[in-house]
Length: 285
Image: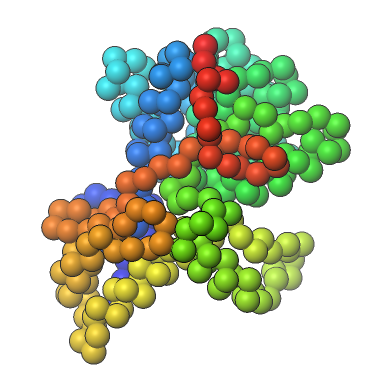
C-alpha cells in the first residue's frame, strides 16, 4: 500500500492530488502570512532571496501572489544555486537589496544559506527584518548564527522572523507537545553518519512536524483496519475530520480538502530561541 502524507507544496496539484494529503499549511500560506504582517506595519517594499529550484520558485511565487493581491509587486529579488553552504559569500546579493531600498527581505532557502545571507547582511550594516519559511529549519539556522556571533563577538539573531507550521515544541501546555517530548526524550537515535560530525537535536520544529505527520499516518492505518489498500486511501483520509492532534487546532480533511491544517505560527528570536512574535510594532515603518 502506498501512503502519501507529505508536506511539500510541489505535490499539492494534479496529477498527484488524489493520493496526496498534506497535514501542514502550504508555502503559499506561509508567505501570505508574512507579507500580510509586513504590509500591516507599513513595510510594502518586499525583496525575495530564494533558492533556484522548484522549492525556491514556489516561495517566490507565494510572495508575488500575496503582494499582487494588494496591488503590489516584488521590489527586488536574487537567487542562489541549490546546495549553498554557510561559507558562501552573499554580500553581493545583500548589496542589491540595500541598493533597491527594500523594507524587508523574505528568504526561501535552506538553514545554511539563510544563515549565510543573514550574517552577510548584518556585517554590511543591513538592519532590515529578514524572514524565512519553516522549510529552513530555524533551529539549525539559529545554531549557526549563535556560533558565528560568538566567534565574531556580535549578535546575528536580531530582527529575524520565521514562519512555522506547528506550534512551539516548548509549549508544554499542549498535550501534543507533551506527548512528542515524552517520545523523543526516550529515543536513542540511529547511527551517526561516518563522514561528518553529528550532533542530534532532541527537539525541533522540524521533528515536531514530522512527529505529527506520524500521528496522522497512524490514524490512517488504524482506520484502514484489516483491509488496507491503495484505492481506499482517499476515502479514509477524507473521513478524518476534526482530528485532535493535541496542538490546539484540529486536523480536518474532506472531499476536495487534502490539507489538514491552515495555522501559521510567526516566531522571532527571544532568549536565544524562536518564540511566538508578541508584537509587530518593533518593525513598524
